[in-house]
Image (cartoon, rainbow, N blue to C red; front, side, top):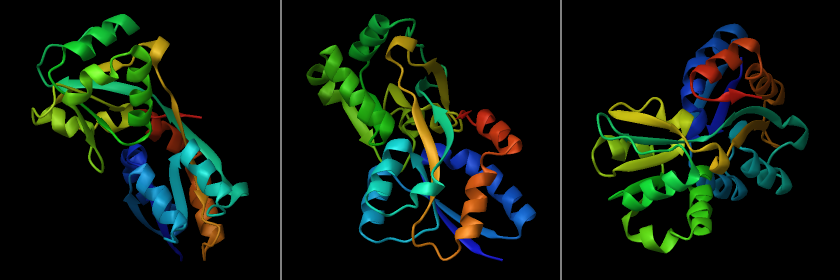
Length: 227
């Protein structure tokens, strides 16, 4: 039996929590998983932190593969997810029917929250393209290590943005929907084995397990679209 350490993005957490015990029962291996913000994950792994399996955005994995941290041949696409929009439970829902109504909703909101992860990086660029980045800067809050929906639920932000899979499990919010199709950003998530893992076979088996039909069904239920 091997003990497999997993470092993952928050977007994959809910699916992982349900799937990890299944893999442990079927394989006899033990899994130790933890969520780490994407930027922090990349920095820590480049600085020498060790793990066995990494699950993160395709862009983050590409950077880590290029740096020699991850085994290039083990990289496996797992799921994709778009950016969602949430308000406090029972609050008025903004119009997300098109890009222009989305722009008006953002300008009209008293406070906005999104993460430092892939969705937040995209939103920064989106607001800049829309020409409203400077106008909304004073009311934007950024979070790291906790769901943006948590601040919305507590009334600390009027509107929140994050990957759909990260908003779904948050109590006390209403998910208005995904971003309008013309401005939606789909992030692809993948898994890979650390280049210096001490249990490559067990680590590879875990990554492969996340592509099984049962795993795909769980990911779909948790707001991820299997790929």
